Image (cartoon, rainbow, N blue to C red; front, side, top):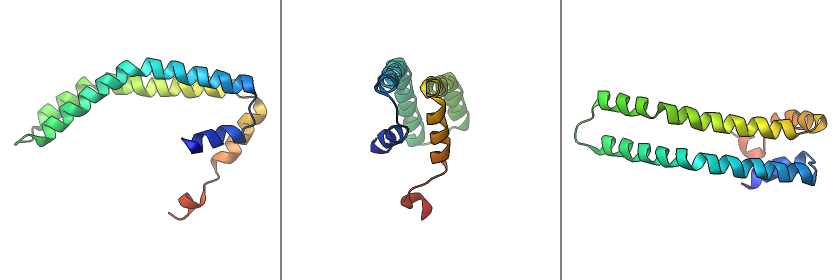
Length: 111
């Protein structure tokens, strides 16, 4: 979480922008609660299928297809949040963000 706040600090955002970003994140979190509950149910069903004595490929595919809509909903929520935050940034902050994207920390350079 610390790394994400550092990214925002590097962009030199105004207090109004930071407040708006927090509002967007809070709204996205509220919208994602129901989807997260469904995802938890999916993970439990997946675990039960994996731990059963005989693995059934057809059951696995049915389970995955059943929750495909929820996976898409999660992806859409993330994209909407990123889009809303991106549109809050000023042109200069967008440039700085693009410039900083290519920079990796020492941890990533060693890999």
